[in-house]
Length: 381
Image 1 (tube, rainbow, N blue to C red):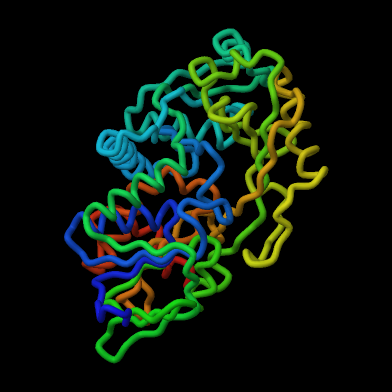
Image 2 (cartoon, rainbow, N blue to C red; image 1 turned 135 degrees about the horizontal axis):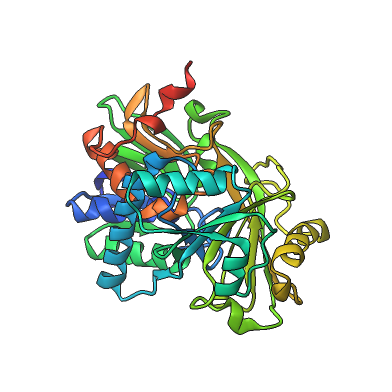
């Protein structure tokens, strides 16, 4: 245990998007919490960065996510109100593609099943309302007015400050080396600075999660991701009030993007980028010309007014599960350890509610949220 002899209720490994929210929810419940972060708070070495991250109520991946996203919105608004931080912005969202593609059809289905306000627009109607778009003729788009973006760095700092105000201890620049169960069914965590004990633990280490438990081997696989920011010819067209966040299926792949915010440039990324599976401790962090070409090509084809000089390129990681759905569970052999993993490039928007779920799993071993589709045993079949 640490120098003061403290035994914690819960240790949270990783204080990024999911871990910071978990620490805050645990501390709010009166738990004695220790958060351990290998890098800075916040940092740009993992997945919880990038200036802006999409949030959308329409959810083409699976309508079962809707109850979670509804709660996530509530909690993001609560965080903004409580901290005064600029955490969430509503710009509207566009999900577009060929009429029979999952991006459009799945979003439409989720809105219809859950009575979410929406409009169906043609490519021409999108361009007339939002001139920054130039979608292929014949495409369909679902517009949902509550979509927008979360500011990840502000969210993480807000949750860490909230956790600390409620009594949590957060230690940055402290690398976890290993952990083990204790004879009394708690955990012991060794770092490069000390050894700590707790009743329970949460693994929220993002791309590094699989290195802490064999249960995630092959189930939480990091891939290299690159984001691009290009300076528009007409910047006002791509400001948040004029340009909804978007997801788009085109022949070049499935892409997503956001308006100008905080740094110059229209933002674009491709889901799973170039499909490069990586070791988070050893991969090419510096973007290269091929990364830029891939993103610029789609910008020129479908958002031509945004295809000016490159302003910024940045790498991050997607950590993918085999079915691209989340992993939220306790470890089968160590139920005192909760794990949040495999967020597959669409998880950050849920961080506020994921923190609540992981707090449930850590303290109670279960949660009232509908998480059966995220259990580890789904991969046993």
